[in-house]
Length: 191
Image (tube, rainbow, N blue to C red):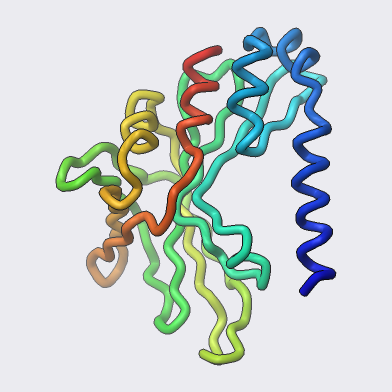
């Protein structure tokens, strides 16, 4: 276990140290302080060729995902120069068959915030020895407005529900943990 955790910690710390926020700021036009403040807790990289910042944040649980399982429920991605945010929502099943999700809706309480109905990817995840089953991971990717992304990111995670629609009707999944999605929104609004 130590052999797995040590490289993960080193990679995380190295990722934070590698970002040259002055260069990122010059190339992208985003304030250096905004970059350092918002990129520190999430994943940011710099595309030197196109002069843009690329950022990703999710609700992944690093310790639970060490064994290879999919722990993300929601993820934001943003590229500087864009006035929208890419969103991915994940439906993961271990004990049941594929849901064949087609779309999703995101609610805060009972208020519909946005619909996610873009590309759907299905992949077989890790093998669970106890269940003797593979994870079935279905991801829907789409683009949402910065305003809708901000509503979701600012809401208490316990009040956010993703309703996945598939061949057997719908399935509700509440966000299971806190996240740093607001850092993506702050970056997008500062550009």
